[in-house]
Length: 121
Picture (cartoon, rainbow, N blue to C red):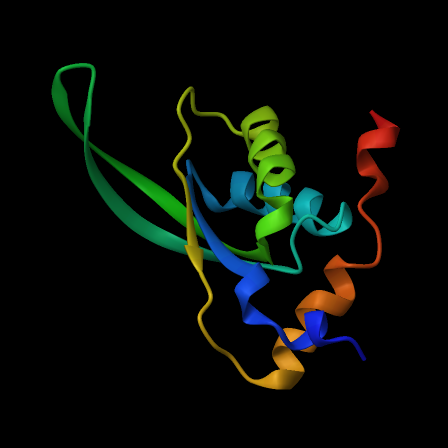
C-alpha cells in the first residue's frame, strides 16, 4: 500500500454548525455518498453565542465533525454552501496531526476511490 494511505499530512477535520440534527444528517449523507467525507459525526444540543448584524445572538445548533482530505476541502466547502440553510455557514478546517495506521488507511482508502460527483451536476 502506498505511503499516502498512512499519511496524516493530507487529512483534516472540518467543523460545521447547522440549524438542527436533521439538516446535519442531510448534509452528512450527501458528503459521504459523494466521497467528499469518510465520516461525519453529528453532535446535537449545542448552544452558540455569536455576533450577527450588530447584535449578540444565541441559537440552538448541532455540530458536524467531518473527516476528509485537504485536497477535497474546496469541493467539500462548495457542496456545504450549496446545501446549508445559513447565509454564512461556519466551515472550519483543522489538521489531523496523528492517528493510528488502520484508521488513516480506512479514511484514505474510502476517499481516494472516486470523486466523480462533479460530473453528475
